[in-house]
Image (tube, rainbow, N blue to C red; front, side):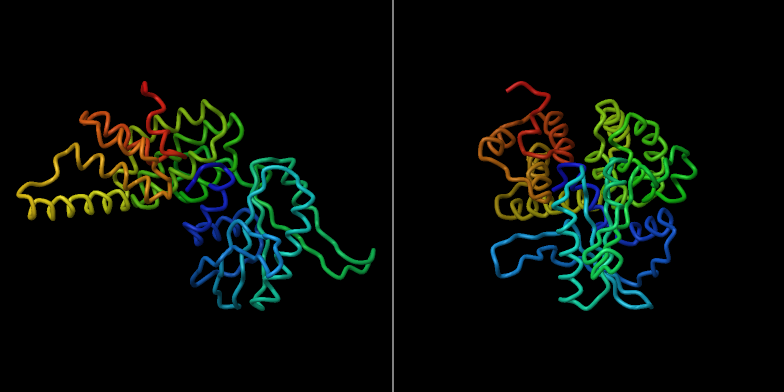
Length: 308
């Protein structure tokens, strides 16, 4: 479930590893090998002792030069404990997989970016037994893409630009070009990127602008997952029709979609919310709730703008 900028920044790399790698190559200007395929690995690095250690996202990248592990971490503020954790992550992963681990830190804060970029050196002065040099993507180096044509040339980078700069008021200037660029990509990618961008926008004005842009385009309802939800609902209706002699009405289809969207996004649905949705017969209200279900962080968010 995407519920914060922390989640949005690193989970985007899971949804589109190829786009993420292109962004690393372009922004960092380092010779990251071109991956042939990716796999998302288990991010739990806990050992037998009761100390939990978990990276945000762990990707296995197969390239012509060998296999690499991309350790992707979102960081909101400086945390010295995290620096020791990062050294542990890389050592543990190399010992476990024997593949080269690469630490990538994502942040919306310039101050945090400067802190994260500092090398971690363990050992004697001038003779370090272990050195960790994080690669950092932040507003310091991710370009501001406010031009529509540039956004269309690299939609992933344009979305990541809006997400990285989402904590500042300047984020609003990036949204209209990005919305136009999303219209040129496939509906599956557009719906996914739109959701992650919203999760990273901190400024209230920027969030409102993005919601208005998305309402006019209505990405999710062109989204492959939404169509799958609708088709599952239609199939259930056909099954019920065969058994009972009639199919699902529009109201029933809408409420089924609302609950399925929440389930697909791993959002728990309390019985009180389920009863309220199932008891509604207003088609327009159900449509509004279905759209809110796309971005809700909890089931109760469906009713945020309605009276109890």
